[in-house]
Length: 258
Image 1 (tube, rainbow, N blue to C red):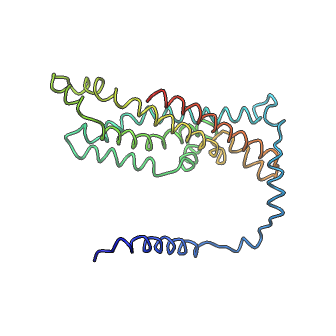
Image 2: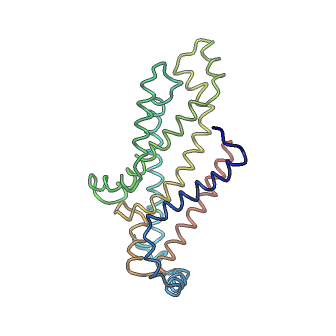
Image 3: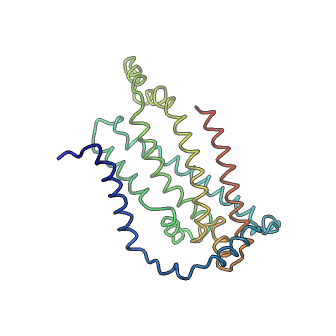
């Protein structure tokens, strides 16, 4: 039975409301009774008074140094993910193979790699290589293989095949076709995707320190646990400003690539 156009929106609205109510039933709302607006306002007020002296003091524990480490983790993790995503992209792109099984295997591997968040990978790699930034780089890198590999594959499969057909018409082999027909179309798109995921990687690296994978996250959680709210304020401010500046930088680079 077909549903009339008039009924579709009300039914969809009711379905969304029903889903929200069903989700709300499983949440324990009793903690709201302990919520204090006064305590919240006092905490927020102290966070808004950043401890500027903690930003730079010449040691390896100041906020500037830890933020630079966080950026380095995001950068090298994205680099590892980008390089290793390329072979998986070649395997998973259906338009590069006459065989249907290989692309499905490649897509399945990429699905598995991006199924787990960076924190899970970080915990695993900390057990393998020990705590520190290297574990964070590996965690971000493996996750980025799955994410970038999927996006690279999608762009490869929906690219314009006209130039490829022209190369085949003049007798070019698969390797020459890749370098002269596919890559010139895809590289600007791939570069834009990599820059976007570099921003994401820096934000992710800011939290990996929570489990001991280096960066600014460990300092943040220690400051919160010790209720050192001015230190929390300068850490959060540093993260926000860093992400904002990276967004401006990568946006300008992406504009030049178009």
